[in-house]
Length: 119
Image (cartoon, rainbow, N blue to C red; front, side, top):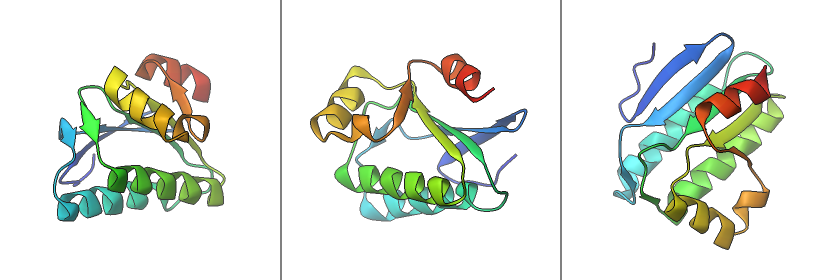
């Protein structure tokens, strides 16, 4: 569906599902910037987009990547969209919790749970 370099993007009805191709999101700044650009592009367009970011397989992420996720959430809210994160490893969940960002995002255990929440 998409020509993203760092993300796998699919559609499930009116919901866009994103999965990372990288297991470690501690990669260099240029790659994280590119991932942010790809995520931002998915938030553009139609009013009221529904987006699931599935972290299955992701083992860790950087603070820069967290910043990209916060910007994505802001963009989705501006477009009256809905963003759900899912599939967080214990390490990623702990990082989000330590930074108190787990309170900012809607988080579901699995993609199926996120899809059910958006239907």
